[in-house]
Length: 318
Image (tube, rainbow, N blue to C red):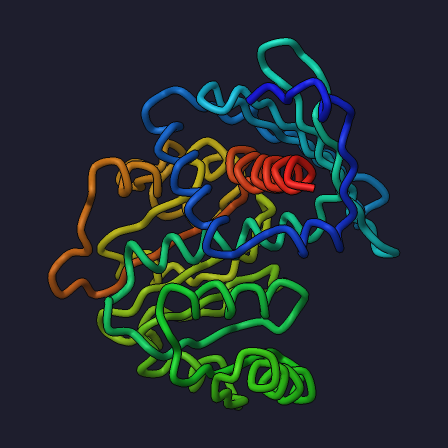
């Protein structure tokens, strides 16, 4: 993916520009492609590193290489009680040039939502038209919108610990997406009979019980991405017919929930790339399907490369 001479300068993108450039459906397709490349062995994640400091602050870095696109990506970010920021850099894998630098806060949310949309499209009941969203933070609306792209929703039930947050978020869904939304009094009532459930909370201890979830439901568990945190009670994974992740190595290191149920090697867990590459079908009459998203340098690369490529094409058309 070497840039032509007239666009060989380093491109710089703000969060706002990333949001303007990214098309959600195109992002989901880009994720599918890179996850299949990973399954085939032509794309590779660079393991995530993390350090904790000052008790409540963390520093992170991860990356990826996609030989099909000739792209290398590195993302670094810092979370503190007073704020957070993330930056991603793209390099040409052939000649080592820096192609782009971009703020990666919005990119990360768009990537997480696109991955959940891919998982939902692959694993959820094709007729599913109701979503329960647990959590109303910055990522929640991206999650609802991305899932609405692959399963047109009739109603969304919203739960978070604060009543005001869930009421305001339900109103935001209706005004932004035109989908009917209801504020649920409890997590249990939110997920009851919901064929799709997305948990995107900041929970540190598990709260979601398996018996709350409807028979045949699909669960996207995309909160609890630190090794010590959890959203899912052990009963959830005991009921799962198929459990998938975006990146198996990151899941081994980062998911307390998966390690406690499947063991350190995560035997029995498959990747989204494997599902796409092998055309794995949703099982007949599953009790539950689960996607656990931990984040992946490859999925960051997929969206970031799309941002850079689309911007380059736009410049060439001017």
